[in-house]
Length: 338
Image (cartoon, rainbow, N blue to C red):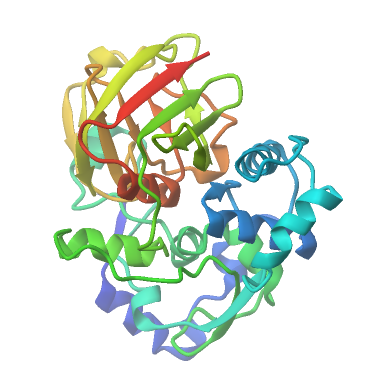
């Protein structure tokens, strides 16, 4: 097998080699992306408030517009989808959530396992112990709700991926990590790694709105309390309209690949049980729905949320899917509408 599976020990050993320690530029492809820090500040505040703007990248786009509309609705403001003066005044009390934070890298932040290259063939994926991140930079991107390109743009390309190195990240740090002790240690570790806040509002029901490409979280008074950009359905697998029930959550799930359920499966592919991992087909969490074979789940490609198609299910970024899992419970209604 050509896939390289790097353990925590091997990553730390590499970090101790000095000159052999990789730099940002070695793990982030493409040129640095332009970042507007004022836009990044708005994104960070919205992310902290539960109106997920997708990837924190300091750039405008449909996910930021949707997040602003959600925030404006929740605050009773004119719904413009813009950072207009009224909206900026409403965001001002939350300005303490600064746009960036500087953190010294720790061994845990740099630890794998890593799988690079990650095979696309489900049969090859099934042979792996996990579907982990490809690189340290990919892991750091998810930790701080961004991408390797954004991290590189905020830092010098030669910055070393070594313990103690100070790195500037988008400020996705939570206010609390006091997670429910009933959750497994493994899932609490995932929540910690993804910087998911332990304090979340509780949903009465959720609405998946195809026209806006968002998942809306509402309380018993039908008030919007959180919102996330989402990918849902396609021409081959349309969103199953109607009202369903969230049956439960599977944390860090394995994935049963059944080619009979995938229109784009290749001829000759067999059923496979894929190992868990953030780069698995459903990311770090699966919220099972009463509609057979459908769920709300994470994704290995956060930058595609709201832009790509799905096989009928509802995909969120891994950090938003993890956050949503703390807002819902078995029996929570999920309405899917056009």
